[in-house]
Length: 498
Image (cartoon, rainbow, N blue to C red; front, side, top):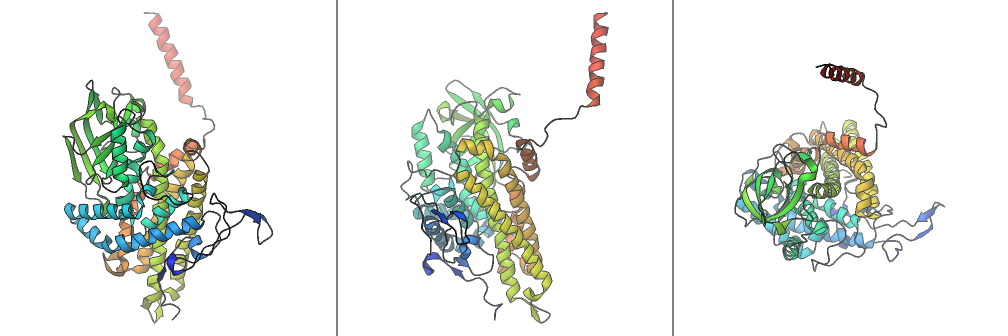
């Protein structure tokens, strides 16, 4: 019987929350710890969520935490209720309709999810800190911080990466440039765009990647030609999340001359109603509900008042956005990996092989234990980075955390890929089948590469980290330099004799 109890969940309303004293700021009060040490007093909350061991982060498991207070626990309960009630019932069909290219039905689903999430007051938590109270009437959680947003991302990814991207892949990266830098020459459009998106009435997407330029942002070719009082935008964007559904497009364009590299980039806010914008769904390996899109701009006339921030500062705005985007992706991959642990253990406790439950085989215990080990380490790292973000200004985050977040994102995609592959082996044919007991594992297995490539590939993340941390303190002299120097001197001598 001990193997049969698999994955019953417990929401916060099913358990009274047990928390220790918390300061008005939401942080644990200092004091003497039970073990005799001193420091912040830990907080503890009643067990929450899945009963499968290690299926939830440690603070869900009635363990002490220095990060999460009563406000976080209440926010978590609200999110679990929303996703279990409003989203999980439609996930499987949404996936099916997306792969069958039923864009009309998928559009209905994403609009339904945005409207429902807006009614729950969740959407403002997709765009970072601080809570955008100027643009929304949604109630702000007490002491709102990056841990509230982390819970939002974590809970939102339990149904799969495609759902997380459908909700956060456009809003979470497309709206922050407008929020952070504004439209100084068109405050009315800025206000309308932000309010409509946070109310779930309109959808926005971020357009950076092109067919010929991804991580190499400074090489973007989509142009915005200066025509006096307006620009004419010409070019293409590819692999744009939510683009097929979008009403607004935050677009990185080249306003400088050819060869101007990063100094010639700007950001513009475009609207679907502008003539010349065409969107086409791209058939991809995974994250189907997100609506990955090929966007074409054919002589689109855009008022100069639609410049985000200042002309020529597009590269800075893109970079400013990247750390938050990569942190979001790392948090999503972390939950996907943990879902693989939950699904594997739940399945192995009920599946019988050779007269035993599958979990009784030591090889399966070791496989799931290794998955859980990596998930626990990744979660601790993710929460440490989130704490750093909480205690730094945006400028300090971008100055200090770029390399750390790059390595976190890299690790998260590799852990998710490892866990997806391991879970597939545990579930066997069930995991290989679309639908049934293995539906989540099959979905995640298709989606993990969407975390290893977008937002900066694993290789780019390693290069970025090496540069940020200054791995190369000095370069060794290249013997070819001396040869080139001698040849240049000889050439100069020969020219002087002519």
